[in-house]
Length: 238
Image 1 (tube, rainbow, N blue to C red):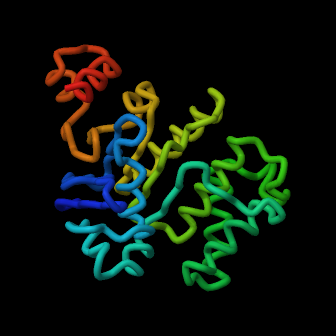
Image 2 (tube, rainbow, N blue to C red):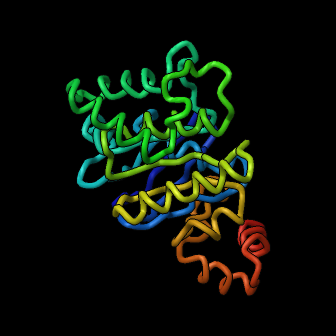
């Protein structure tokens, strides 16, 4: 579980995240939504311990992001927006490098590479250099890299951005597989169809603050709108 408690982040006079609190449960996909500039990516970067909070904190499992960032990093897999991967390395070499960074021994890394190549259906391109890969192939490499240490918690920042229909469907099945394994998945997206197909709960951030926290049906009920996009726009507008 991820538990966020009164989390705040300031950049000078800019209050990017203001007193944000919510929970994301194990075995569920929780959507983190909001318009551009609302504070979603900053919240994810705080949870990933890339940024330090100004005040408040969050717990990833039992680990406090402020006092135990290394322990947090050992239990999360992060797929950032526009994740960079090393183009001169093959897909396997990218995954292997991150496995060693996570402290896995050689045998464990190779075992995990084999598992992830099968899970993500990367057999046709796993031994090729990443330069020239399609966006869908790049996302698979970045996701495998994020999962190499078998993390309990997975943070996905707009993972379907730029993917075609087939790649999006494949990624959706992978996320649902991770959910069935009991992982805690926090999913940021602007695509309401993906949210509707994948997510159990939703947290909406507007102007750095939580404006809704509940189920998808709860969001529709709150806004008195059957369409999820209309409900989102109405709640954010309020």
